[in-house]
Length: 490
Ligand SMILES: Cc1ncc(COP(=O)(O)O)c(C=O)c1O
Image 1 (cartoon, rainbow, N blue to C red):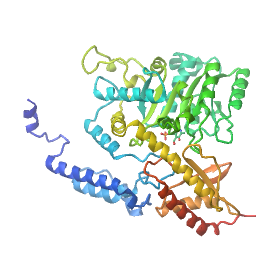
Image 2 (cartoon, rainbow, N blue to C red):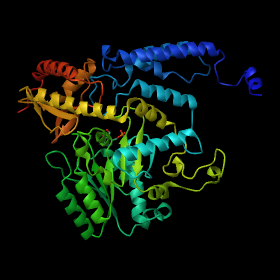
Image 3 (cartoon, helix red, strand yellow):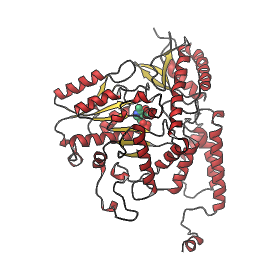
Image 4 (cartoon, rainbow, N blue to C red):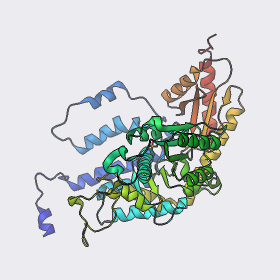
């Protein structure tokens, strides 16, 4: 029956009319992309899009299709050259993973399967459960902890907050809203916490005004004494402390909070402890770095990204929650169209849609499974450790130059510096933009102590010390060329 159905192509089906030609072009496209990855260093890190290319994306909705060969030619000419640049070893701006060829393959095969991983009884759900158990093992969580893929850590932190809110106020909060609270909920995070945490409070209707941003110490970590005092003050004022965020790898400085001390406070205060480990949580895969994130294993929940330091292609954020019941009670809802069956495809007790808000979900677990299966956790850990060594090499090279001041300690992989001496601080941003525009390297800009600074987050497994030496030489030349144009205003 199956062959009879496929013999006659339906005119409305969207499959290729010539499978052989599709196969040929697809193999060529894959080959070209593998060559791109193999030769990534021969191209500029980033290049601005010419006006004509930008203009080519302003066309009206195409009503008829074009040949795939033509569309692939457009991809080669107008899309591939103008991507973010994060695959290149001299990309060190922001905190971006570099991807891996094997992750790309996993992503492509997942698209081929086109599985909807919202629920039901199929292998996509089983692979995600496998990855969840690996995450629990990596972080020292119990094997029954529940977890799911999300877009990124911003979403994981938000969902972690919702579980904490539910735990603090009980299930009533889902129906009654925040009126279920006997008093105002308050959360805590370091002053260096990522902006998505304040946003999560806003999205949850609690309000970012109820997030206490606790001062940091000289390493950039939350001050534990100040955290204790803030909680006590809020309790005295009749407020309801319910959640403390610890940061494992702050975005600006790579600082790591004392997670053990936060866990102690959370336990004695009876409040939820969520770790924002967007990139830093995976430092646990390196035996040398693991002590830095000690205490993370005591968290109630952790948000992190496989697409950062594990280099799974975007996107592959993840939330793990120690207490599966608390997790499920926050999101699960009965719906007739999601009814479970004792047998068949609708079998299964807890589906991903019971522990998160998404019902349609891609097979993010597959590219992650491919990455971990082929590389192994130890090799990923070694690449993370190498990034930190490269960051220390960069910091030492900059410190050796009288032209620069390194302005933050290097705990993990983030180096922050600015031009020393009698110059307008804006020169720092100009240098960064100049390096970007020439495609030489991509550091980023930030502000430390209220003043502009340059920043390198070494996340890329392709970046080595020789790249850094080349970068420092370019940075020096660029700084010498520009600094005279930015005298300090008296
Ligand atoms: C510490 C920290 N938290 C949260 C985020 C946000 O993660 P995402 O971009 O995956 O939403 C980042 C991003 O760099 C981060 O460094």
